Length: 122
Image (cartoon, rainbow, N blue to C red; front, side):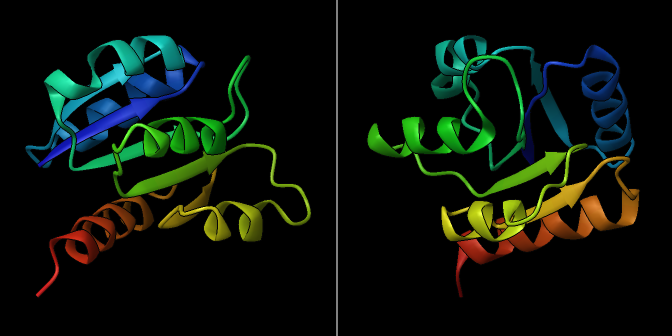
């Protein structure tokens, strides 16, 4: 399984990357949406983990940008700033899960598994 992580906080990127690699998940991390856009086709992730609030584009903006280009990936939105309505807005815009930081490892693994399984179909 391949997961792409986009978060502007280097410590969050590193921590999630280390956690996922312990389960033999191939991880690529990105600090900016531009980095992600420049390399996503070559990496072909099975799932995206996107920070909701970042400088420039939000996680939802990134989902829309990719979708408009025919690149649809199961996406988990993560956030440290859980505001009223954010969960519903993210899920209604196509996110497969919405998780609050600090992340619970089991919850993250479940969300990734469910997201990838849902897109794999029967």
